[in-house]
Length: 230
Image 1 (cartoon, one colour):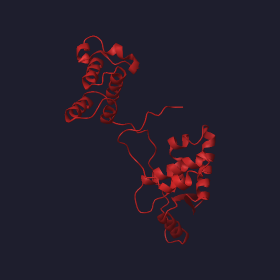
Image 2: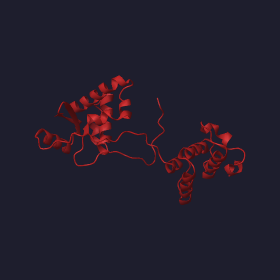
Image 3: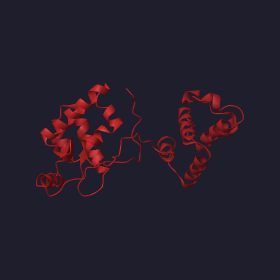
Image 4: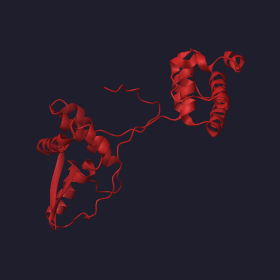
């Protein structure tokens, strides 16, 4: 199991209806249903327009999401079908199937007033969504930026420190700066000057392929030792 490093101070948030926690969560006993329900809340908030819905295609196309539905790839589609079916039976999602030529287009709406109105409009023939699936947003691993990492590990941002971090970003790869901060934390030297000295050492003598915070001593001795100890 991969360890979760924690939520950043500033990160993108989504809205989940309070009734989900008070009425749905105590009842949901299926992991596929829980994953599908939460994913639909997230996915629909990435869309625009008055009428928002998901096609089954949207979920199938998100490889990161699908990889979490089941350990074996051959079981993932079945798990998705189970999650969607349970969410529809429970009433969390509304399902409409449109027949287009020789294919079926499965649409899912959250069971809200707008969702119910949209489904009713489709059933009455008053409105039909276009056949072309829009490429949906996909799950990605969100990485906090250098400023957030500094605040979380070193200390508050002052205008001077913010300017210095911007300068470092112009000079060094972000990965280097993050690694330098990790080493500073590991060595309990929570100062920007300490991080800068590490970066200078890497710039002149090479960073190496595999850098870990516990290897810090081999990067903080020699030419830049005085700067680092400052």
